[in-house]
Length: 139
Image (cartoon, rainbow, N blue to C red; front, side):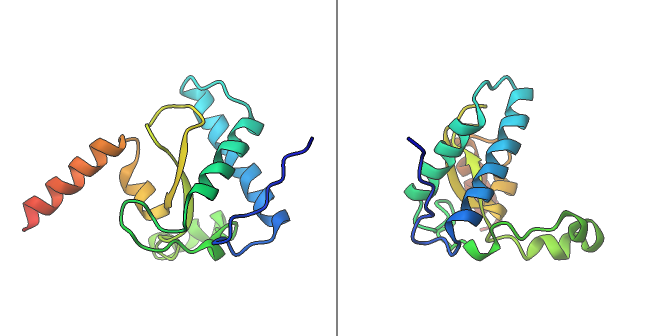
């Protein structure tokens, strides 16, 4: 039986566009994670990302701000290279896939691109400790 990949209610995308986005994200994550010792398949990643999308309410779990699902699938690498940081800043609220524990396994959460970029390979605990250190230093 085929898996249904209907987008969650907070995602403003049709099923076909959403499924293409899931497939692209799953492929890129799988390729990157294989280099890091991961061994899952694209279908497993698609299912895990899909589940993470449905667990999400469209709010970044770290900063509490809404993510913009209309940005899914519209990022243009060529334009990013041409326009640089100014272009990339427009995508800060893009929902993206983050490994929950910085391990090359299918255990994902959905966060904004801004959070994912800042968090990098840190675990949730390391990232939160870093954020607290930043706030403590500046206050």
